[in-house]
Length: 492
View (cartoon, rainbow, N blue to C red):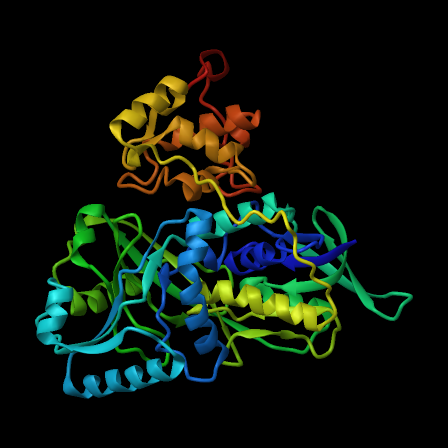
């Protein structure tokens, strides 16, 4: 019997798990995929918003500002790279300058600090590559950039080391509400990997939170998938944006942005298209052209031939037009953390705290641990070490002397560590999210085969059982005739 079962291993579910791991509670996370961060959390704009966009009085407004303030501490504790680069919302006409003033006043009402409207000259000092058509901008110093999958994995690792159990490939198929003898309710959750009993459920299932709610019989709500397409450029284009560059937002979102990434690339996007299929992450010619045209309006000088990849992510847009964070009115013990669209990534530290407070209001007894450990050791980044530290590390462990991913300078030692860590990588995408092997110019064309070999060796499985992203996504369909793979221990 668990005190709390959290459904969903994205940034929301993992942040709630870490918050609850501070207390003497038996908690587990059920994730339907083979790894953490396989949904919305892995494919988004990676921006920590300042908080001027959401309507005053909404949960989005409140939790955005609170979460933004918490980010510096959280990322320091978890050893996650985070930079407060600031953001600008660019106006291209006097009419749009009026919109900036509305956002400015909204930001003040929401409690955003260090916010101002800058003129064309001040904007160009902030962003030398901005379009000459830009006339003014709303500037906020507190906005930042982060790596969302590094943050999700780090948060989960810390929750795990503080006692939270994680179960993967654990799609929830059925939930039964159980009446206990003392009049309280509990739950029986049936999954692909077994059954779990719990006193409370936190529904943090991302795009599927409405379907999970239906299985349990909670008060109805619906989530609309909204697809956003992006392009990422090589690191030699990263200099083109110093801050996160927005355009005046529309009803569909914050528009096409141009942003540096935490790893030095340039990111443009997203589109905003409501769709029906919750698994449709395809990119389209029309979508890519839309983001190119939109991004060039802000920064005309990026080179399309420097694109290294494009991708699409899905956001869960709730019918309530606000985050759904509450105890269910129909089912005692069910708490929702759903509809976490933008600024969800920014808000999660505050969302986690709010969910814990709701659980306490619902009767969960939370007694603080004295031995909670908030800190997490990061994976060694060989390329970021000084030459002397690199030499010392290679002498201690020769695996760090073998570069596997040339584009990102990722060594075999880093990949082995990513596999052996708590909640370690079990597939190619897992290694990529933890180390960046495969995220460079060649997108895994060079390092992919070697990563497959390392995964097979470390996990003690055949080469043809290594997957891209779990289940039946096998990286190899077989082997070439007479390849001698087993005897030679390598690729033909």
